[in-house]
Length: 410
Image 1 (tube, helix red, strand yellow):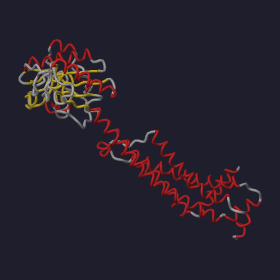
Image 2 (cartoon, helix red, strand yellow; image 1 turned 120 degrees about the horizontal axis):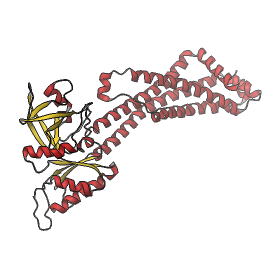
Image 3 (tube, helix red, strand yellow; image 1 turned 90 degrees about the vertical axis):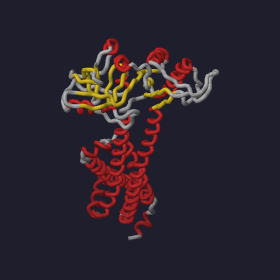
Image 4 (tube, helix red, strand yellow; image 1 turned 180 degrees about the vertical axis):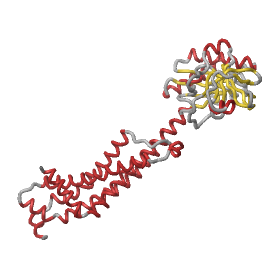
């Protein structure tokens, strides 16, 4: 019964003070919308960039052979390190923290020819594991290199999606034959388009991959340009690097502290920095929205103080008739929370409406605005805290009014 009377009183005050109530509620509405919109765009951008970051591969580390920069066990510095495919196989068998590994032989500007097109592109010779490490997902109807291709040195090729378009145009080209360096190859798969914001030799969509066994036969390469290793989980990457350096250091006799004998790109380190940066960025965006909400909360507190002045006589009468301080305080707190809740709900609706109206041409470049359950609960929690703080002081003033003094004012 008490809550029903409070609600009636609240809406009666709203009708009498439409402009004042609207302006106060608008502060909460806009503050809530700002928090949700900034949080939504921040989360969408984060997910989009994470997707692009993982386009290169997840939990991977790339190793390039280098030159020793320190003398070691009587050997001079300046020695060239060249690991072999057999070394990669040894690492695969001995390093338990590895999930996958593959050598990568590579040639740039290899001539390719179809019936109508002549062009050049990068060709890499790899193992079957390379596909999953580097997120090379075949389009429907295609596949990546497999063990039989390797064993039989088949002339098969997996194409980046844009390279396939440059060679053949639009359409399904699995099974078609064309020439790589004047040798016929059959297309076994075409890469599904993917987002990718980093690479070590250009974007994957313009590359071609063949079995490493075929690559070595064609061009008589013995030494891969690099190898790609994938840890079982990010926390194990340090161990993977140390173990691989140990295997190669033992065979080729270089100082374990020699940072130039092997050049290493640990992509998990960049990912950690990226994740930390975006966490701070999203916190900054939420902070801006919260400041707007705080301004709205000050407006709510002010209007409740005005309501208190207007209803001083009413409060005095209630207290003279025996109303407890707790009841008066609860009434004011209830009205404050109700005012804030309505403004917050309208703010949620406005924010979701704005985010749904964002055109696809924009979301393609910044990601689709997304509000997670945790983000929504956080916004509700912020609104709740502001409502309680904004209503507490006017409610306490109302509860502490002396009935006689309140009635004397009128």
